[in-house]
Length: 510
Image (tube, rainbow, N blue to C red):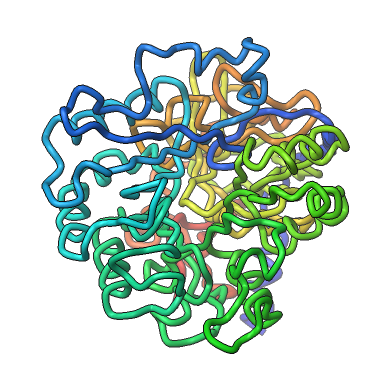
């Protein structure tokens, strides 16, 4: 009887706040840049032995970043660049301090222009003559502090180093024309997992590299995702997208196995909900290009295997046809994530020291999720004053291909928020402090009339009026105020004081 009375008391005493019911208009047409996704151009070249050429991103060539140039108009929607460092002159010597300084300067140029990179190191583009395991390990160790220092503008690190183009196939030192993970190849993965920043993914060229390294063909699960475990840190890249013979052996097995194994295709389809996938097409045959470049064929593959980035040029046999038949534009919209606001239930009024209920429905119409960690905030904004409220929801788990995620949270309004009326925004800035305030690195939602380019925030088209609540209610469970009662219901703590019921921030009974 006493329990029933208390539950009724809670129900009757809960404050009633007005709610904004908002629906949003999706923008299914516009093409715009968003961080860590989309088409990539490739910059790369030989790092010279003389140290006179220690860059692959040339600071003097500002034309590259001029998106008004007709030859580079695709770059208007790009946020990623593919960087290829060929260490051809360093196969048997250490990288010089000048070369490492040049890498640092390249990364700063990316920051200056709002870009990140898909990064790869290799030794040769014209032959299979790579470096020995000993030198690969030495070079990786030299690069480690520079990768850590610049992790903010590194989207992913591709395994590289082995074979022509760093694609782990034609190789003088690691077994030629084979995917088998021999001892030397395994040692390269060991070294690269050590030097790759722990919050960045290492991408391997063939699924068999990962399955043989781990000793299992069990795809990563949702429980294992983003855990920092080895299986959660290795992703994939496919540099023969749409080619014959299982994408030139991408989905093939060594020896007598099939060239195109549906088991490996399903493995990649499952894996890439939680680890990145991207690459380029290398189809040079015109007849095959006509066949594979059709929109329905291309979009089906990109959707199933959750592509997040793709080379914009090579091979022109395919990319030119994509441009002509509308596929390129659709890919430009949907590579990686593309979030849409669908609807929201937002508080019209709230009190400091108390929680306010926010419910936002978000659709991801892209081919892939986000992969690198990124916070999400509700922002209360009044003029130049902004108060970010961190959400518990993880944007990496907002699943793609039209899935709708409902973000439903009770968020505490801090006591320091002044009374007043605030515009509500949704903000997904970069996780790194070095980029968090740069709107070019914030996520734009695909809706009509919501994007604020100056701040990098998305308008929720609603206001909340904040008034002052009771001081110190967030500590009330440990230091009860006079005339209060503490009640536990559904494993949460409620404080009854007079006619009001308060929840206690951060307090939950286990």
